[in-house]
Length: 564
Image 1: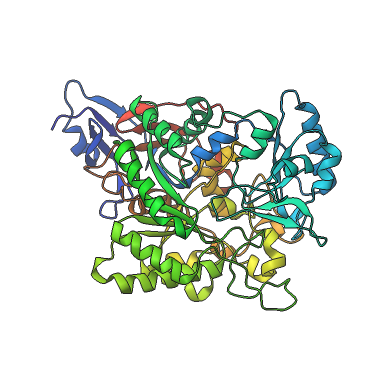
Image 2: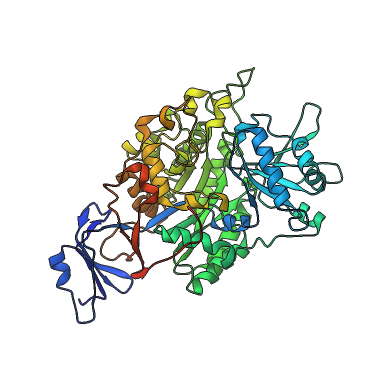
């Protein structure tokens, strides 16, 4: 067969166990028609065949980001972004300077990112500190994990209902506004959404928070520039966003595969959630747009203490408090069985070992109930802490893990020491036994804001996964020598990371028939590296150079406006 393109003289890492390495790829249209030796590939040359001599460069399959939030990132373009610091006085000084640079006339609602949970401890921040800086307009300060925020009194008052209770919405049940010992609201809120309609209405102003080419395009360009060719959205934020991605694809501008998820805010809303998913499937499916996954938050964030632990919290004097979960075991079993009947996959946010165990127990029981009809894929995302007794259960039960390796240098989780204790915190992000027992682990960026958009670079994730050192936010060397987050045995190999970012994610997301590896019959989604990834020092991996990428057989060179 005569081909459109022959890519030869390469070091092709295929992720196909039957042919792990090759020299050449032959492309016809969007698809690969041959992978193998230079000699065999060149036999397919015709008079119009484009010949691409790689000169020994390495080729990888296109990257699949197993969990990101492009629709939510697009809504943060108008936020004020500050330098991340842990000292309270320095944080307040930075907020004050940012408020002065963004006056009320141009910024009627001051939305600032971000702060660290450990700056304030378990009690959290108080509006009184903000009131001194911002007494004349509503202000919201976002905690960097996006699982908490901090309002000033002006904003808090705008959110109160007729009974004086602040109101907000959340993808996780109902937001929790914290009170002090006198019963007064402090302005600290757990698990709030990034939108504040009550405040917008009160100030008579509303930012344009729809996903648009201007708001989401820079992020997608950045990710495509770094080899990402498929994204699962951690939850697609409504029909308008779903419609945008569909129309963006129809206009030929999307340039990657987009896997949407329908958010299940509460188990009682399952029928509505399924109906939304079916509506999206019917109206917004395309060659590149898919939707067959429900997303649910079983717990919140270890650093805030709104999670479920196998052991009692270390800071609980009674020794009887294990945290919280947003669904019982019985409710999870019921949801899983229903989704299996509907043939809809399930993606569940679990950060602590108690929630992980609950989901493992729920899947095990649901499989028993479903018997031979079992067909769905259940993914537990994050799994920051897994009890040793549960690590082999992922392979046994066929549960997938979606893990964010750029967190594993201490970017997220250290502040949970007061809840979990130092020993357990220092065992987080350990997937060694899961992988070695045959568990399917895939990788993702889980970026939620333009403030961390540079972490949409999968090679940043690979670097930190290999080193356990965060180059931007290193951990305290007093606690962690050489800024390396323990345990050392949990460092991942480059081969494991490439495997997780490609074929493992493809299998989990049901696209392994068309991508995830370089082999005959699949799409020609390829990354040509300008540097050899297998000889590049791990500590420099985030800056590794890409020569070019091919998406569905078409070479593309994209320039992003996002700084790294």
